[in-house]
Image (tube, rainbow, N blue to C red):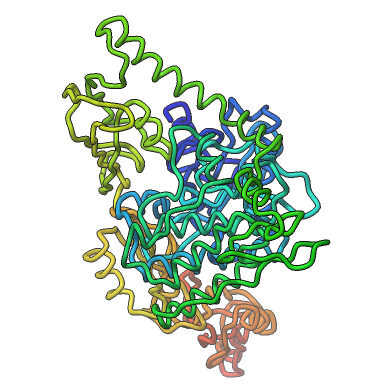
Length: 589
């Protein structure tokens, strides 16, 4: 993370001021930035320097920007701007403050029924919108779903999405961790459509309802094979409180055959709506899939796979077909994709076995683990799985912290240096991490049309921010009321930040300056009065040594101090020299 700290405080492309790093992944680094043009906080996802010249990485990055730019939905993170020219390749996105759904589930375990319904409805609405545009996400998993404090769900990371009429990223480009959520056809390298996303959603619903994944194994390859062939344990066997209708919906979404699943996200949404109204409702099995060329096939609890022959005519062949599932030459892409991860696991296990042979003469997986120091390290998706291979079972808690960046481990139990006996696969060292949420934040409320004194007091006392008042005329808002804030409503604000309140002075009163009229003719003075939105007051005439018809006095002195439009100015106009009388003339004679 340190190598990207240099960007903090910089202005990207003369517009986006980078404020802090909020996340670092395998391909990109994400910054929080401020856009002064739109007056909003944004997230900037920048491709890492070391992968910016990697064609596959750039392709995935461009793919994400194209996919999301086609979408506009409240449950999908929006993209505002994209730059793929030059060395800095970045995407400017909607900034959301929250945690991944994965982290939330790890903290809570099995979710409540209302949470499952609420979260899944939002995810499915996002998918329904994407599918209507011809986009298949292909990487639905809780790590790619953000949960905001107000319960709003945001689906993210369309990096490997399948776009309509476009070349997209292939399965071999995917992250290994996704194997826990991929559909059987995706694991087998077969063509994928929108129903693959629905299978992944079914796996996600299973995990929400039970607190555990339907399939887990020692290696990603074994999990991929289970996705193709294994039958999940009914969720009610793990969590007896799950309504039957919800279990039916989950298992139908997870059918091995795409034809036996729900065909559209709207079908699942319809069921969830009925469950929300009546959790005791149950559902009939979906109609059995039609086997093209063979008439109608028979399904068993919606789960029969489409086949080339009637399964009732050849039970032995049908049993073998089910056992094979989708496995064949098409499994090689996923095996190749996870080979490197599998090799790492083998090396680690081999190290401990070799150590036993050389030092203890025991061929088992039991060893004494000295607890490492994790404080100050970054906690990221996938760390749990990595540490499990080393003998740790990780629990995660979250807390706000004024000094540590979000995502940094700030506490651990047990302490570094403590020793635990570990047996891989059976007994692990339970370790609890407290991970920083960063400085406490809140979502800026809508304070428009409220008295600025009340708003300022509330922001200071309740939210702990500093307020600054900027007053301007506003034709539509009465004086003393707030007509806007910076950051604007809906933005994420950190405790201690400064919030600007834009306060109305009421409708604008036109003002003007008072010119110097002395020496001007009456006509010229009147023209200048009109030009400056001033009015003529009383005009009197006096003899003077000034030319007749010129201004010799004005009631208001010339000034640059503004006055109200329409202000009147009194003038004294010269009549010229006073004429001499006959009496005076005779005396002089």
